[in-house]
Length: 193
Image 1: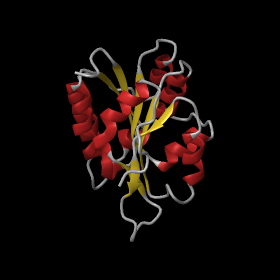
Image 2 (image 1 turned 120 degrees about the vertical axis):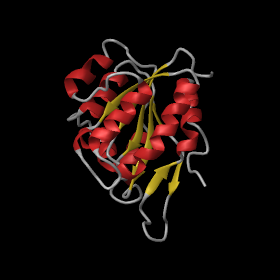
Image 3 (image 1 turned 120 degrees about the horizontal axis):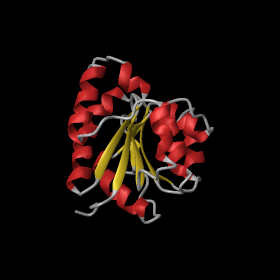
Image 4 (image 1 turned 60 degrees about the vertical axis):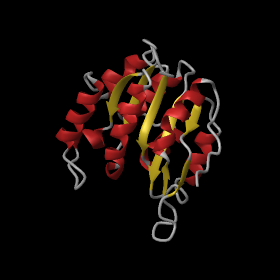
């Protein structure tokens, strides 16, 4: 149990096609001994898609974590003053969220959670999932790679032929990335095969 006693915030943003893959990783964090608190973006909280209904996702994340979910800015703000987490994970992290993080925009629960958490100089782990990671969002990813206390789950192109700008994190490396981030290190290699 390598994360025993560690408090992990899990911020979930609207890469709806990736949500199903987050649930087993959340289980892995818990199996490693972490106490996990979920923060849902407004997109996940309110949007029904072909990948599932918003209410069902809310129930699944609540059931696994066993805690009420943080769903708005007011609930997320105390994360900083109360030093609620040892590490905050954004998984999946959309290009929209990456762009806002890189440019200091705080207009939702997840972004407030990150802002509040970073004030304590504690690690934030990003599991990117975006169709424009090697396009419009490449500059924002570059910005975040150079920011203190920001770490990325190793990522790669998920469909180089049909979606050449699309990148996705290797979620199987999430726990290892969190462990490295807690030691102030970026898990390597960053570019996954």
